Image (cartoon, rainbow, N blue to C red; front, side):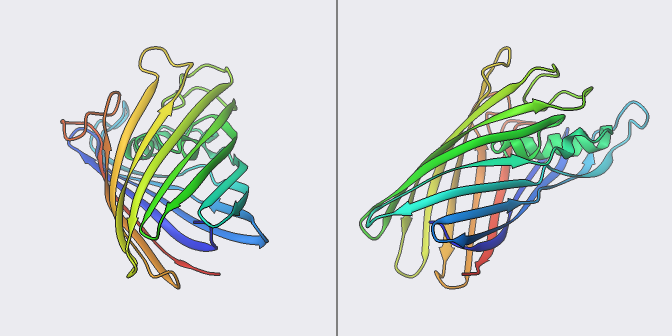
Length: 258
């Protein structure tokens, strides 16, 4: 479950009213000492043929950086159970002013069904903790479960913080994931991740639930990849396949560097 890796997560969402959005999240993870891991993410938001603004109502393309994120966690394992716990902090590039910057980031947050919102939140310094488990039922079946609580400390102002409101209050976001996966001896397999994001301070709909069925291949020595479909199940981003709602293609690929 926890190894030294480098790769990228890609989410591609296209809708007639919002254009095409690509959320790209390169990552690197390494083990500086036994059972202690550092994970770095460098999100990039790209928006193509998106809606215009008041100054230029025509279709526009945009690009922005997300919040680079540093995560430090400890992981331990016995024969069947692996657990981990740690913390994270992000560099608040969402405080950069500019409509195009925030629009591209907002579309990428939607493309990921608001999961890992700390990567994209505007005008906030994201700081939080995380933890979870992986349990192996024999050689072929794995169950993963985890969650994290992130506090969004306000910085800057003037733009609503995506799923959050535009107040200057401290916000808290809780997210959780349950993920059963089947694995074969050859490295091929598949699974499904049920994800939820909950923002208790938001008026109205406080949560977003999504489902990510995927295929996976892991050589265990060098290359790994996942390919699937991210489906927003409820409002505000779902239901998937309705016009203007979120159904994103998902691709992850990378290599083991340990």
